[in-house]
Image 1 (cartoon, helix red, strand yellow):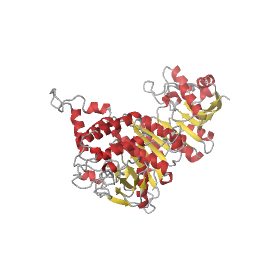
Image 2 (cartoon, rainbow over the protein chains, first blue to last red):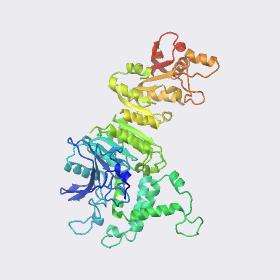
Image 3 (cartoon, chains in turn cyan, orange):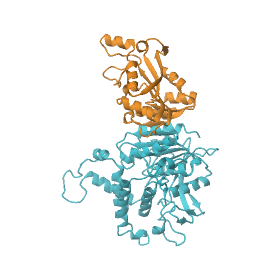
Image 4 (cartoon, each protein chain N blue to C red):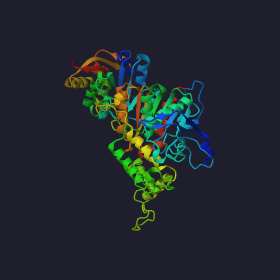
Length: 380
Length: 193
């Protein structure tokens, strides 16, 4: 249960809502979702001009529960609660903040785990692959139903930052400010390689049953656990792993066996277990593919990010972290350069942090001061 | 406001596109935005100054000037400003070349080491300490202090044409024996035609 002191700057107890969309959505792959649900949360109050809305786009394992608590007994608040709330850098006293679970997710929005109304069974392997473009199109429909024609800002880290970029390209007139944090314009081969190892862990798990494990009453737990353990290594820096765990042994001496010996093994297995208990393997597969596919320069004969970002008219704040090697500062600078080529208003900050990619989720005084300062200048 | 800002602002054409290197909290750019309707970006390395720029509503790109200006395409700015930073730059020649790669004209300001009070302090046996040079020799960021003559000689070597020069002491313009009586030098320059 949250301490009283943390509740002061918290949005408090929040209740998710569900929006149903009866109109079919044609996906980038050509597949059609005849109807779907999006689950979302809101914090703060939409003003009379409907001009103070902020959309928060989530990353690989995120969801709509961005801030606050679902129940007083919750162990943890929403995943970006340190950034969003009354008096926080994204001040819910001024802004109306929306968190949405993306299509294909496993936290309430229509995804592989949802029941297909045509069959009465979980979609499983029949759920189509969705892309960042599809997510943004579905988020725009959600904005329509909330009667929000233009966002004051759209914010996202990592895969969430890619959605922010896509918004600025696909709906330039619908977003005034874009905050892209620890992100990249597209994945590198190394990044795709990591994702594929993670997918292989799931796909080759005997309990996977080609994605239809729900019908077999099994669950590819080993695969998902391995996938998460691998992912977790890449979200941390060598520095932070070294300082946090080093070569510390749990029992203080070698046991000459394959049980947990080093603290880092214990930590990774714990993270893998925790994730495997709370996430859906099909969703993990699909989200990593969305990451791999995103490339605003895909249809160009000569890849040119500047040309791809030409439609964008929003003002940008781009932030990266020095020890993030999964979404390295160089990748953020590519976005900066493309925006400079288009003479857009853009600011770029490179935060000194030893927390690797995970830094974007953590509280760092300078990082949060930058977002606070930027948001204070965003009019409502 | 710093003495050199108004001089620089007077040179900037309305609606110009300006790049300010080592822009601090973005005060000059903010002034140019408000009084010259200028557009542009600051480049700054220090975290606190990057934050200051964001607070000032000025575009800022965090980067180390010594590594060049890779994000900035050639010939995309009307003016590239380096105000009171030249003396702290290690790669002096490289940054001057970069300024005229991305900009049509460069503007630099620096404390004139040839100012008589500086010369006097050296003559009396100490490194100069003054309003423009507020550091002790052991904690100064200034690694390339120069006189006006020195700077002009470097421009000649790099085939840079000086288009205008204003020299000031305590905010007042100096017209005679500038390298001796001026404490702050402000130059506007371009590539030799």
